[in-house]
Amino acid sequence: MRVETAQLSGSDTNADRVFVADQAVIMLDGASAFEPVDVDPATYTDLLGHVIADQLDQDQDAELAAAVAHAIGHAAAHLGLTAGHSPSSTVSVLRTRGEMVDFYVLGDSPIYYGTGRTTHRVYDARLSSVAEPEHHRYVSQLRAGRGYNAEHRAALVTLQRAQRRQRNLDARYWIAEAEPRAARHGITTSQPASAVDWAVLPTDGASDFIDHTDRSWAEIGGYDAGQLADLLARIHQWESATDPDGQHLPRAKRHDDKTVAVVRDIP
Image (cartoon, rainbow, N blue to C red; front, side, top):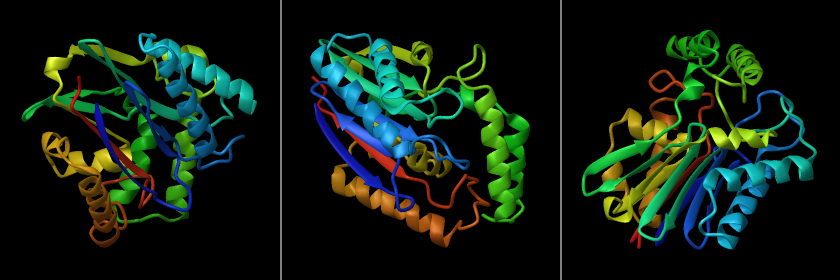
């Protein structure tokens, strides 16, 4: 399995993490905290990803949800986390296993894969149905040209509070935080290795722009590390020069962290 990666921080710290295990790639996107939380999101994603990678290296047939649940429990205990006051993170995993490829997605960091130009997506859309009025308010403010001002930040705080009240509750949405059982609600699927010539694991700082501009995921699935780095730099430049106030592509921050992993030569 060949893995190419690139990262670009949106600010002084980067809460994205990508880990490459013997037979797996793990992508995490720590949620920006617009109100203080007990632990820095980057610290949380770093520990969470290390533990997942260690679990999958120790047992390459391990159930992915069980490995993620173990990692959430370990991180919560080690960092002293409590639900509702802790950082959270998406978790996406691609794991090769014999003649199969397993996919796992918890939160809104998708996995794209396919053969040739044919593209499929593994995606968890549940967060988009949570706190819809609050989400609509902050998007409307950006589309109206109000930019990243104090009003925008206040709207994000209101949104995160509303999301937090519905986090890891039945019939709402699930995310890695302090509750291990959340891992059991990840989106899972498996495909024959013959159906996966390439795969791309992005965080939303990259995927939102790529989807917005209708770029080909199959083409990106052929990129090497240098081409991925160039892609992230172009996204950053577009955010600065073309859409600095988030009118065309409403987003929480002008520059989010951006990470992409491309997987090819899957055995």
